[in-house]
Length: 177
Image (tube, rainbow, N blue to C red):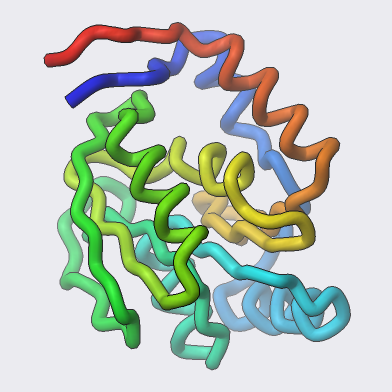
């Protein structure tokens, strides 16, 4: 497994802040507001990152093209999500890293025209960055912001440039483990 990026202590602090629009509130409130955004914006693709966010949007009839989960909620093992997907891909992605395998899985999932669930052995949090990088323009990536709500990231050229800068600042590690 080749690690492409590894988070630095400085970036860990920076990434605690949302990289998109923070929608504050309860699960019910945040999903209602997110549904309003997608009804207005009509995104080309919706990508969910995280088990709780994915579970909540699916329960509220928002079906992501790509779901990235790790079968954990707040680092505790949870029951695997049953999603109406045509493809399930399993990848390894240790905490605090982004692996080449994960990046390739996200890129391929977004090229396909089917619903895909990526199940991560490790941690999925940083994969929201890769989802934004590879998603088509005007897509939305949604992820949880613990104890605050959800973050909705509209994919634009400017947002991709911001993510590219974050990735550039990460330690690039090019050795197989």
